[in-house]
Length: 177
Ligand SMILES: CC(C)(COP(=O)(O)OP(=O)(O)OC[C@H]1O[C@@H](n2cnc3c(N)ncnc32)[C@H](O)[C@@H]1OP(=O)(O)O)[C@@H](O)C(=O)NCCC(=O)NCCS
Image 1 (cartoon, rainbow, N blue to C red):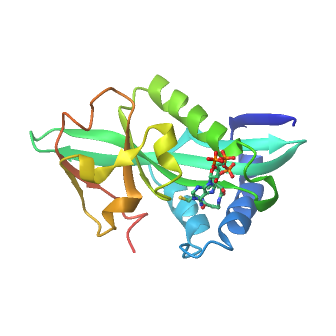
Image 2: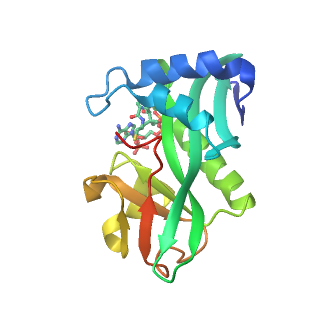
């Protein structure tokens, strides 16, 4: 498979929205708001162009991942920018070929090189643990949104980052209903 993983360019944006729409169309849990989420994030400083990544096969965009910024307010009064992974999606005909995994791992590498220390994801509880994500119930960390704890997971880029810091992670307006 002739797979290229690269940063999204402006020209890719319509294809990215098409991939997002078709990937989430048949997902029961989805409110079909993923394209709007990405559009909203693009208008904010939370959007990180280097972490808006596409997978291309034979010149066609077949998958997309975005990591954007969230605030982590710690109990000691300090505030860090962390990341949230949303969305990740692979066109239905290209799923289960390892593309989603490659996008997640590439995103983790770029995030680490940019100096981010941790990532939050809301998603399939069986999919993310193999990349190192662990349920938020294992940490002393709360959210400003009411989301079932078993689908909220954290990934420590810096060892013990979430383990050693308690506090509250704040979703920005782009994510709030
Ligand atoms: C979830 C998704 C991004 C995975 O990408 P992918 O390229 O198909 O996945 P990979 O080939 O890298 O990994 C395949 C593995 O993921 C598992 N997997 C795929 N979709 C899954 C899901 N919805 N829940 C749990 N595991 C899932 C497969 O069973 C397989 O497991 P195995 O490695 O143990 O055999 C892709 O299926 C997708 O776009 N789904 C629709 C949109 C979506 O649900 N996005 C994520 C929102 S949290």
